[in-house]
Length: 192
Length: 192
DNA sequence: CTTGGATGAGACAAGAATGTCTCATGCGCG
DNA sequence: CGCGCATGAGACATTCTTGTCTCATCCAAG
Image (cartoon, rainbow over all chains, first blue to last red; front, side, top):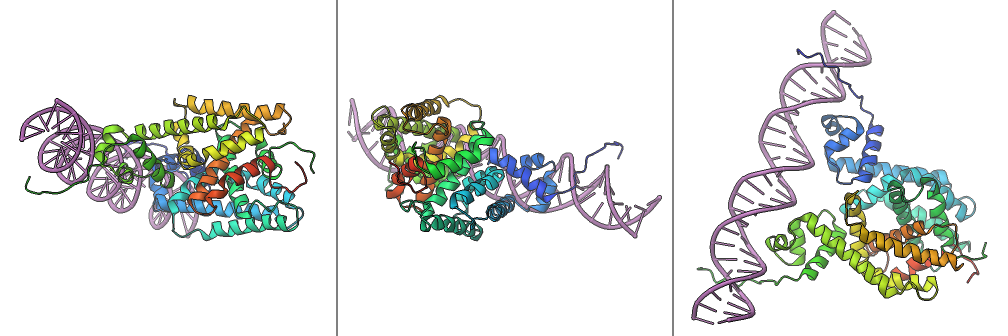
């Protein structure tokens, strides 16, 4: 009343808050709601008004991750052209979401048996279909199952995201390293 | 005094406790000290007598993980024969530690800037040396850096460990899938 | 048999995080 | 100008985990 304090009222921007939370939680998955609020530039009260609890926030982040993955899948046009090119497009599109995926990947073990997995199952199915198409066209070897290739792709994206976060790998090399390793492997040869 | 209850006194076995803790924490990284104690078959009091706190327990698990990694590196005889065979031996040897490594990998982000990393640095250095040897002998391609190949190996081991834990991949396929993908990639070809 | 050591069970306080509440402030809108 | 709404700040109780403690029990060594 007596103090004429000039406060900065930050209007609530759901997308901005979610991305701030993702950026923080990717590095410190145990961050407090208070830390998340500070990272997003809002107060804990406002954060709690829009996300009733930590689990709601994590679920929202999961939905965002699914959304970004499916957007990347769409943008990559997996059905067009050689599988190798589709995969290169996909990794390039999915790179910005690598940090969020790393967080969700480590958090997923907590969702054991609960719902909200239909989104991941859709994504899984589309990737499996991509790898299966590559096998049926003769472009990919058939002794590595599509399910394992899907796991490996996620694993490389996640570990690549962490390596970039920690500065062990340059961000600009991210798509090249992942696609080259996943497609061609480490062995040197004269092949295609 | 009046009750003649027959209790089962579990003698303390440090290794057994650590492995029980690792098995639980690999699936639920936020497990309580109480849950860890129950999983190890001892009381929380005894657990706390031997590991003064949660951080001490995690550090002990980290030391165990480093120990098992270095044992696997030794057993794989990385300096002998073709790099591809050395890598196959390594993955085979490191498979039993995949669960523990998955937990430590997700927990590592909490050790930011602190000590205890010299063990991981030693392991990293040995893996980098292995990949470098493969590049210099012409066995491995040179456009994938040894640092990235090391990251990718860890990423594949970790994601493979999780996939096995969740039943998405058969445990017996673990070494084959990882080594084949890491060495040969997904593309089909006539190469060696 | 007796004694010392280690364990299990449980109580207890301290601390952290969460969820809920109130109140004052700032901003947009009529 | 005045009003309503959303925010920021902070207090508060609750819950969970942790760390410490005590005591009874069991086992093995002497």
